[in-house]
Length: 257
Image (cartoon, rainbow, N blue to C red; front, side):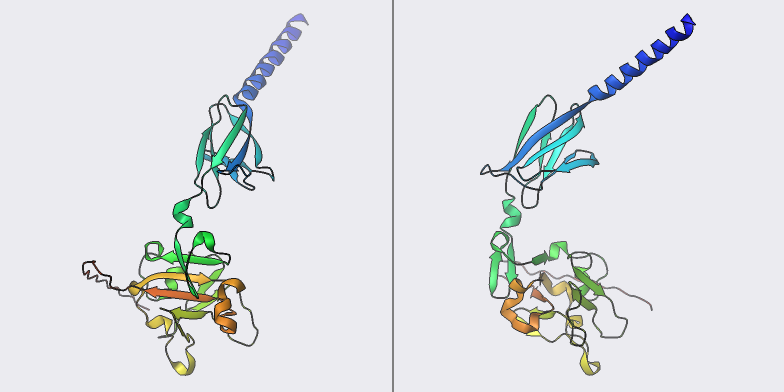
């Protein structure tokens, strides 16, 4: 009886030591995320580096609390700000200051009545340059946007000369056309393939496009009136510039159907 109680006591003691050791490896990390002006950043993502499954977001006061192993590195990120990495070891309360990502905020976006920097935009606009276009064998300009713009659905068409079906934030009408307005170098064009005519968008060489801007909401498309009720796609083509050397690019592709 004595031996049994002694063994049970040893097992209980060992279990307690294991639990205590595991708890000692974890520590509650608390902190506050603010911007350069000291204002709290609401909804910033705080996660463990190399472990995206463990994380949290800041509250209305910019505060967060997270259980993390000792010596862990926290990754703090928010849209429009540069991502920060903070060492959590030995810190009772972390103060994280996020700096604005000036590079992305100063990117020029083409809209209906000119060009603005991203930080000055109030409407929903997505801008894609030729560096971020879809790669691979591209036959039509609409294929450049596949998977690149949120809220844009593109359905290919197998008919010769027919363009892809483009929907921005779904259909807006049961009877009228749901096609977005296409603007090429400042000139609105009719992209419908009526009477068997090829789509205007399908006649443009994708290699000649420098950037595409998708205007989604009413404030961004207001300059075009009712024609822009289904959104606007603004296409800027490549042009020669003073001081640049001439470049000749050649590409070819074959397909069987």
